[in-house]
Amino acid sequence: MGCIQKSYTGLKPTLQFCYHALCMPEYAIGLDLGGTNLRAAAVDRAGHVLDRRATAANPGAGREAMLGEMVNAIAELRDACGTEGLAGIGIGVPGFILLKEGIIRNSNNLACLEDFPIRAEIERRLNTPVILENDANAAALGEKWMGAGREVDDLVLLTLGTGVGGGIISGGRVLQGYLGMAGELGHITVYPDGNPCGCGNRGCLEKHASATAITAMASMLRLGEGLSARDVYEMALGGNEKASRIFVAMGQALGVALATLVNTFNFPLYLLSGGVLAAWDLFAPPMLEEVRRRSFSFRTTATRIEKATLGNEAGLFGAAYLPWAEAAGPRRRGAD
Ligand SMILES: [Zn+2]
Image 1 (cartoon, rainbow, N blue to C red):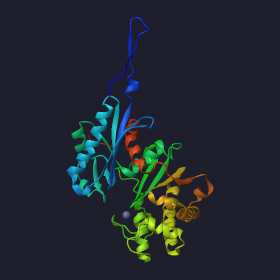
Image 2 (image 1 turned 90 degrees about the vertical axis):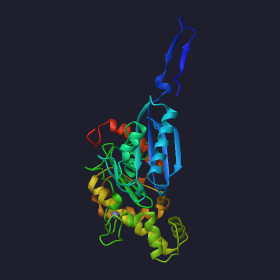
Image 3 (image 1 turned 90 degrees about the horizontal axis):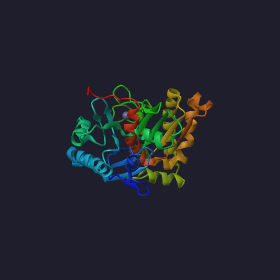
Image 4 (image 1 turned 120 degrees about the vertical axis):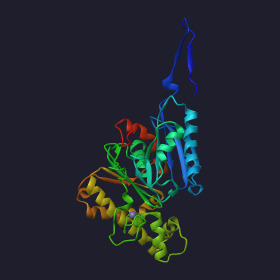
């Protein structure tokens, strides 16, 4: 990006000013990698998107192809916006992250990137430091920065998708835990003898409150074969009682988890996001009833449970914000 040289010819001798702050605003690059999409954006400090890239993620193509796509997207944005104003690069990825090592320990969606020093490899190819974070943690940070959580410093986000992700923002920063695995709220036990989960537990929240859970329950109740969560939602709207019961069960499971979170954190705000939010009117009443029953502090304070507002952009904004969040204090890294 070129620098604007502005001259005031009315003055003698001619003075030339270089407005670096205007022509090269400070910006960060965020990349949000999912099982199906890869999105990256250059975002300035005020949250304006300067440029963006999007492509289909194809984990089946293998690790090298995935790494290449990630590095290309970031390098293109850096070339387009210039290195002078670049504050840093943040990357959100699904799965359990080992923060210090910069490794994805386990990811259902991106098995090809598991147990590989992904951060170090991307840093090597870009020749610059990058910050790695769990995608739901990044989404929670995005909602705090530019979304429904702008007015608070403490919040929890639950992302309801094919699984259930979670992120906890405390004091304006991602709560990471000693390894980086904090906030895996989809694996909170809501029913001790509930459905088995890939993590080894039974009755995890995501087995009772995700889009996958809705379709599984529909299949169990013999509502039809190959139904999507949206199909089940439409059936419930059309008066199908079994379909309606599925959303009540989902709301109750969310309520059990949220009551535990409210009782644990005493935060002012708990946000829900994901495509399943379309069914809010069906699952929210039983959910809120369950939280009221189980949480004294929810019953007696102004604690809010609301919809997130950034949708699937939250992870992208949060990833971009990671360098500025880090500037407030260092995160866990290796001995470097
Ligand atoms: Zn689990």
